[in-house]
Length: 216
Length: 169
Image 1 (cartoon, rainbow over the protein chains, first blue to last red):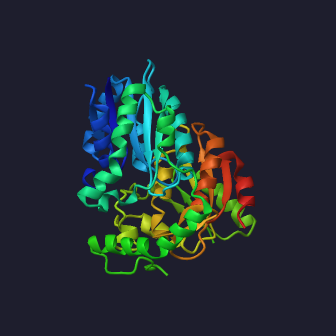
Image 2: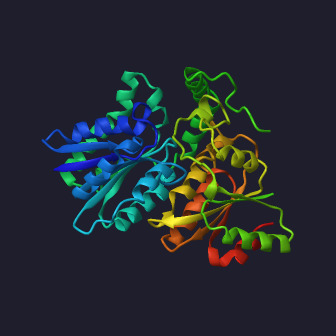
Image 3: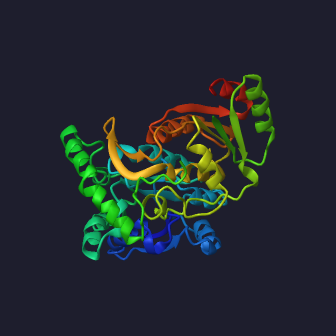
């Protein structure tokens, strides 16, 4: 199996959480001799090459960070330039987000099924998982912990050719957190998580409180 | 104030909107964004973590952002593509993130970002062209508004301006 993989994130590759996810996913997917070509939407200079690869491929996987409940504007700009397929191409998706619960990604997922059809492709399903915001800020060890489960999903995709298996569906985790978990996580939001965000900001050179109001 | 951002190059829709809003004594601020320079969001997270509330991209969206924080309603006029709004329409939604903070809370059982300026504008959409899946767009606007803890004002075809204006109050 050969797969064209497009990272739909507008963030540059170096800082792209989706890219780190794809690193692990493709490790698993390519174990049995499968191959892939990978492209980044954030690199506009490569758009002609991506279009050519799309035209020539019948197995396309687009990995997407959720942007305002759907696909990022930059990915939309690229997709608008494509010619819908007329053969037997298949299009599958990896959809990931910062918010952790499955319910947060369902509206985006619903669009992807429509998108595949609008581009003349059979829909190969979407691997849905949230809770990925911190990947870019993690050290190597913790990043490996966060992204390595995707390797198993790569194996599953290689075996099934799509994301429709129960194993892929279960990968999403809880649709919504149970009330006691929300109480606990809500407490962390006000303490440890808030501290983490301040630390993340400081690592980028932030000198203001995170709730600063520049325009009021 | 009702903020209306026209991301299309067709100003006949906004002319009609302006006429109807004036007739109904509605306070509208119309931005013709079709001729403005507005980039896509590059996902750098700077508006949440490095320069809180400020977008790293210095282009014409900053002016919209400054209006948006005082708006009661945010209407976007957009062309359609691939069953959705086109990239210009989507960009003015993706760039909205500075009005939220990085900090999180649970609202009705789901994670939300805490608003930076208090109550956020309700959201409405006016679409041009026939490439959209209206049922999906209605779901999408509901969901986008949920994230702002505001409400959806609905999705209207450009031929239904009167109905859209009736929601502007």
